Length: 215
Image (cartoon, rainbow, N blue to C red; front, side):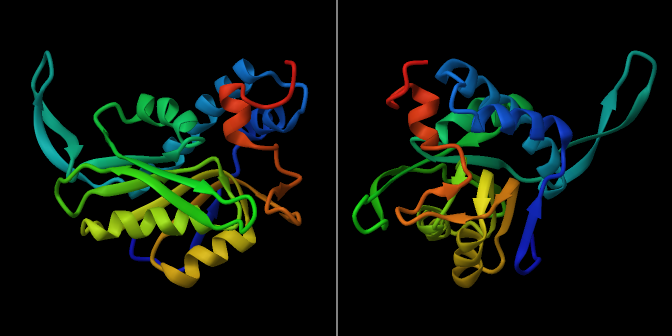
């Protein structure tokens, strides 16, 4: 994670199919959540090069051989509340990951992030920290989360989003150029109230069924 201004858009056909389901206004919250979980699992497979391993000796039924284990802990940090939708899929791929939480909500008038909660593991400072947020829009919440993680001394940090806007990526690189940003899709722009277009609406509302749709 020593690269500078590293934004990676994941080109995966399975992810493209599932993102199309997320965009569809007629996708109900149960199916929406299912696709978020599955996309998150696929994204973790692409992020795996960030994970550092060390060799170990293991016993097979026939003989000893070289195997691998984590060199440093992995910490998954969903940004509440929408990031919770990605946690199940991410942890299904990395079941021995630790989990932290950062609560940030957007002020709908100023579009600025407002902090309300954090709980982060305190382990080896060389840990790989992956911040989960389905929508990287203005970048305000992600930058706030990065700063909270850095306060504990962690340096190996990446962001995993499903849909990103370039303005959000640029905001992260302005304040934290060493952070890697992984996205399934890079969308066109933000609208006048800070939502990604074409986007998929409010990810948190659609994951948890608190939107205004009847499906």
